[in-house]
Amino acid sequence: MTVPDKPTFRHRAEFLAMHVLGRVIALLPTALGVNLAMLLGILIGRLLPIRGRVVRANIDLAFGDSLDRQEKRRLFLEAYKSLCLLAVESAYLRYGQPEWILDRVVETDGLDRLLAAIEGDRPVISIGGHLGNWEMAGAFGAHKFPVTTLAKPLHNRLVQEDVRTSRERQGLQIIWAGSDKTNTNTPRAVFKAFRAGRAVHFFVDQDMGHAGVFVPYFGHPASTTAAPALIALKSNALIFPGHLIRLGPTRHRFVIGEVIDPATIPEGTREEQVLHLTQRITASIEDLVRLYPAQYFWFHRRWKTTPEAVARKQRSRARKREAARRRAASSA
Picture 1 (cartoon, helix red, strand yellow):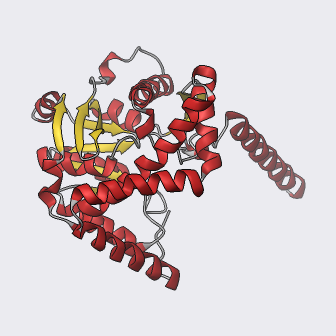
Picture 2 (cartoon, rainbow, N blue to C red):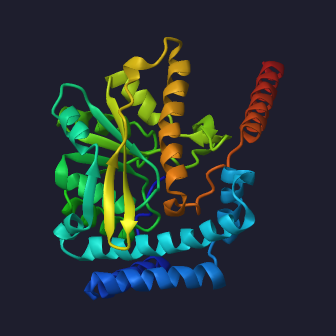
């Protein structure tokens, strides 16, 4: 996806509103801002549930009969509280002091393993889902070790520049994935980061449409990026899941999961190995989401693309190619 060259009036208004609101929030004491966020989350969840159908459908699909109606309702409301907390904390992070993050992360788990790996002789990939506060996770990580993250270009160039400035102020480098038409810049940038001794972070829990591979996620096939698996197999990189889990309104734990080593993947074709490694990566995200479901971003249509839809599109393309071949043959 390319970013529009010139921002529209709507883009300017959107950026101005976000910028002013963020600046105002950053002036509030943290405890006050967080309490307001939780109150706002409750009000939105009860009165004006944004993307409510998506949230309910995702929760139903993920948990089925394992949660009763009341438990699903509670999880639904907690999702909005988590979203508002994320927005408010991101304002403090973006417009406050870079060191603000250090006082909020009161525990770490597994960080020593990751730091030791970065000092080793193999590249390091960190992977994560949209769980807890992923913006703060990246910022905290950048304060502890050199890290580069992949991000999708934003439709609003002004917001994208604001995000870039904020993340780089924290020491986090960004690769805008797919920002060129051929998408060849992304792997080059990743390997350049490896050569510079930087860990590279991928988000792996978004629907990848027809470009993804299908692996189980909460028991249902989900179109998933194969990029971390492909790059890990090519570079022999170690893979570490990493998340920032909320312990309380203003307290967080930085959690590094068990390493996933591509050298332990069973032998097979490259396609089979990529699929197996992607399954392990996805399972590591699911395991943590099951532990902290209220902190997950249930607003994304994770299961939007289905294997049946991909198969239909492939058959349609095959029919078109065959029709074009026949036309070419008849006109020869």
